[in-house]
Amino acid sequence: MILTFVAIFMYLMGLLSFCLNRKHLLLMLLSLEFVVVSLFMLMYIYLCSYNWEFYFLMVFLTLSVCEGALGLSLLVLLMRTYGNNYMISFNLLW
Image 1 (cartoon, rainbow, N blue to C red):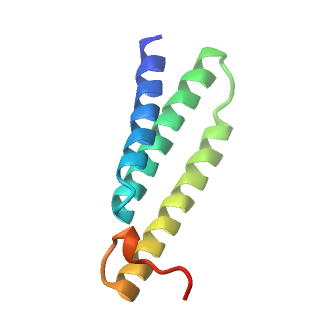
Image 2 (image 1 turned 90 degrees about the vertical axis):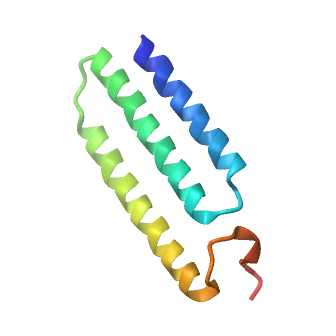
């Protein structure tokens, strides 16, 4: 029961940090990964409580790794193009 509250608190703090750190792309990616870890913890607790299989967790981990790799590749691309990771300097109209 306490682990569920901890995971929900982690999820809410991850969303709060995502909303507050909207100036830097790297901090946004880190807070998204924190949200993914808290969602993984919530799903694990839920699946353990009902004695279900954990195949869905493997799919979730695979997709979250793909999301992290895509975010890091975008970060590297934007760092090479613009030279910084400030969201205000990215002009998406060009």
